[in-house]
Image (tube, rainbow over all chains, first blue to last red; front, side, top):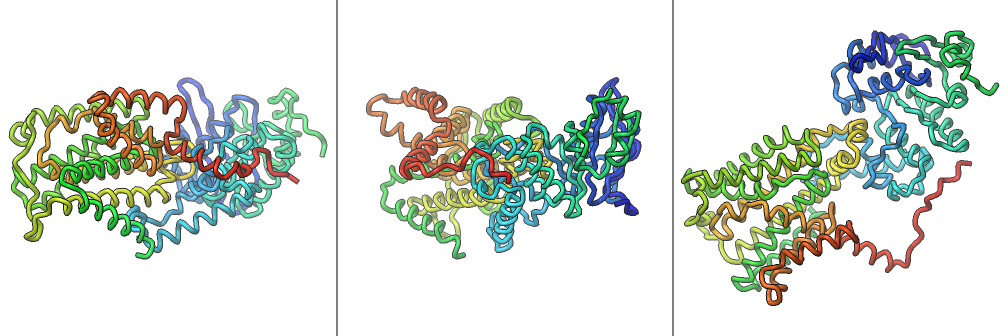
Length: 261
Length: 322
C-alpha cells in the first residue's frame, strides 16, 4: 500500500473563512487501492478538507499534488478530468434525466469529439454515443440498479439515489473517489451493500477516501484512518490504532464506541 | 447519408407545399417557418440550457440588419455580407454571453433584457446606417448565380433553414453537449464535479442558439424586404416564450407545436375577437402554468400513457439487497 509516490499528497493545506481557521497546515496522503477514512468531531475541518480535495473550494495556503502534479488553481471540472471524483452527502442527481443519462454525464471528461463532429453526425460521433450508452448501463448494473436504467431519477429511493451517485462517479473513471458521508440516511441493509461496493471499487485499484460519522461502518471498512480536530491531524493509523489513541478518545469525549468485531 | 433521409424527405415535402400555395399563403407559410425556427432555438436556450434570456429576438434583428447593411450601405456582394453577418452575430453573442453567463436566473434575465433594449436604441439612433425609426427598405435579394430567387423558391430556402436549425439542435441535444447543458441547468455543482465546464457550456449554448437566430434573421430580411426596429422589440420575445411554454418546455416537438398554434391562432380567432388574441394567449398561458406545466407535450404523454393502459411503472421500492 505504501508505494513510492502517494496518489494524492497534501502539504501544509490551510483554509481560512474570515477569522476562522477551518483547516490548518494539514499534511496527509492517499495511496492507490486503499480505503482511507477521514474522521473527527463536528467542526474538525473534515468537510473543508474534503471540499478542497474535490476542487469545490480553493485552499488559502498549502499544496495538493495528484500523481505528482499540483492541483492548485485548477477549476472544479478539471479535478474530474484528472481522476478525482466525488459523491455528495445530499444526493445531487440531474433531476430531468433518466438514470442512464445521469451516468452518461459522468463520462463527460472522456468525450473525444468536437461539436462539429456532433452536428455533422460523423461515424466517430455515433460510435462514441453508442459506447457511452453501453458503458453507462455497465456502471448502473455494477451498483445493482440495472432494472431502473431508463427510469427517471425521481422514482428512486434515497438509498438508490446514493448508488446512482456512485455509478455516475465511477463512469468518470476515477483514480481517487471521495465519498461524503456515504452511509448517512441509509438502512442497515443498504449500508452492507454500500460497504461491498466500496470494497469492490478499492479492489479495482481506485483509492477511496471517505468522511463518515457512522464509526461502526467506517472502522469495519477503512484500511487506514486520519483523525482531525481543530483543523489539524491528531492521529493516523489503522482503525485499531486510532481507537486506542488517547488524543482521539479525548477529542470524541468517549463517543468513539465501536461494537467489538 | 442513409441516416439523414428523414430530413431530406421533410425538405421535399415541406418545399412541395410552397408550390401549392398562393402568394399570400406563401407569405404566411414563410413566417410560420421562421417562427418555428426561432422557437426551436429558444427552446434549446431556455428549455434545455435553462438560461432565462430575453435577447433571442435581438439576434434575429442583428442578423437581418447586418446582412442588409452589408449589401446596401457597404455595397458588399451577398456571400460576403452573409459571412460577415454570421461572424458579427457570433462575436456579439459571445460578447454578451461571456460576462452574463456568470449570472443566473433573474440577473441573466435582466442583463439580456438590457441588451435587447439597447439594441432597439441603437437601431433607432443609427442614422443612415440603420435607417432610424423607419428602418431600411428599397433593397432586394441580389441575384444568385444570375437567378432571382423569389416566390415559392425563396420559401424553399426558409424550409431548408428551419430543417437545418432543427437538425443542428436535435443532434446537439442528443449528444454529450445536450446532456452537459441539462446537467448544468439541473445541478451546476454536480455537473462541475462530473467534469462539465459549466461556464463554457453556457457560453456555447448561448452563442450557438443566438447565432442560429441571427441566421434566421438574415433569411427573414428578404421576406418582407424591409427591416425596422418595431419588428425586433421585446413583445415578440415574449411570444416566443409563450410558444415554448404552451408547446412543452425543453422539447423540440413542443416548440414546433407551440409555434404553429400561437402563430395560426390569431388568423382563426380574428373573425370573433379582432386583434385581442393577446388576451387569449394570456389566459392559455395561465391555464398551462397552473394545470399542465409540461405544456401540450405533457398532455400528449398522458394520452399515450392512457393508450397503453398504464403499463406497470418501474417500482419505487429498492432493489432487493440480498
